[in-house]
Image (tube, rainbow, N blue to C red):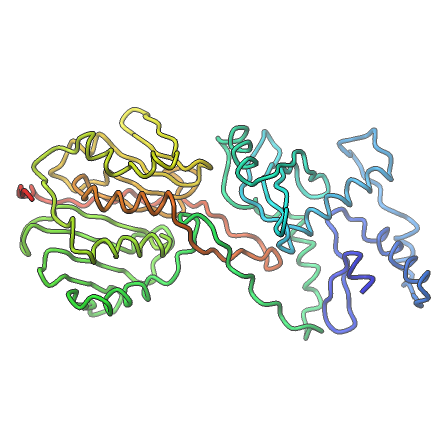
Length: 422
C-alpha cells in the first residue's frame, strides 16, 4: 500500500513496478526504501540498483539551467503527477495544439469541483499554466490562443510516455488483481458521441416501421430499406471504415424517376444523429420537395435556425457559409456554388465533426434539395442533444487520433430531375 501510494503500479503477484517519465526511478526507489525502513519493513536492495541510487541522475541541457537539482526534481515530479492523472483517467484532455514547437493542451480534472487547466510542454517538462473554474471558459480561451492548430482529444503519446507504459507490462503474467472494468461512458455533445451499432439502429427502425421493406444484396454486404411507395430508399453498407460512406438515403418523385435529393453519412457518424434522421423519415413528412425553385436564403435560414439560436458562429468565406460550434469541434457548411446547380445531386450541405470540414472525424452530406425540415431537425440535434462516449484508457497504448484524411466529397451524378410541387 505504501508503494502504491508512492506511484508504484501493481504487476503480477508480489511485484510492483516503478516507471517514470523523468528517469528518476533510482531516486524515488531510494526514497520509498527509506520510508519503508522507517516503518519497520525490511528492505533489500540489489547491487545494481544501489549503484544507480548512489550515482543519481544528471540532466544535460535542461531548459531551465538556473534551477537546482532539487528544484528540477520537484518540477519533474509535478509533471509526473500530471502524466499519472491523465493515465488513470483523473484528468480528461479535451484538446491539444501546437504552439510553435511545443505541445499545449486543455483538460478538466474529473470529480466534484474539478478545475480545468491549460497544460504546456511534454513529459518531465509538462506543467499547468492557467487554471479555470469551468471547462467552457478553458476551452474558449484555448481556442482563442491556438485555434489554427487545435485538435480534439489528447496528443499522441511521446516516446518517453510509451516506454514508461510498456515498462509496466514487462511482467505480463497472471496478475494479482482482476482486469479493471471498462471505464463508464461519459455524456458529451452529440457530435462527439460514439458511432454506436449502426446495424442494430437500422434493424430497430425496420422492426418499428412495417411500411419499410428490408432486403440485402447477394453478398450480404449491404442492406436496403425501401418504403412501400418505392420513393424513399435507405442503403446501409456494413463494415466500412470510419470515414467511408455507410449510409445513403435518397428520395424520388416516382419509383422510376431520378433522385430528387440524396443524403450520405459516414460510418463514424454518432448513433443519436442517425436516430434523429431515421425518426424524421419515419414521420412521413418532408420527403418530397419543390425542386424547380432555387435554394434561396429563406431555405438556408430555415435549415440552420437552431444553430443560430444556440449561438453557433456564423461566417462567410467566398462560396462557403459556415455555422461552427462554440468550441469549434463541429459545424455545418453550405456551398453556395453547388446550390446553383440544382439539376445535379452534388454535396451542397456538409455536417461534420472534427477540427474543420476538410479534416473531419465524421460527415453527413446532402444535395441541394434536401428538405429544410430534415436539415433543421439535424441542426436542432447538433445544437442541443447529447450522447455517450466511452473514454479511452491511456494504459492500453498509443491513443487513436480523431483526425484522419477526409474521404473524397461524394457527388452522385444524375440526369435532369423532373420538377415537382408539393
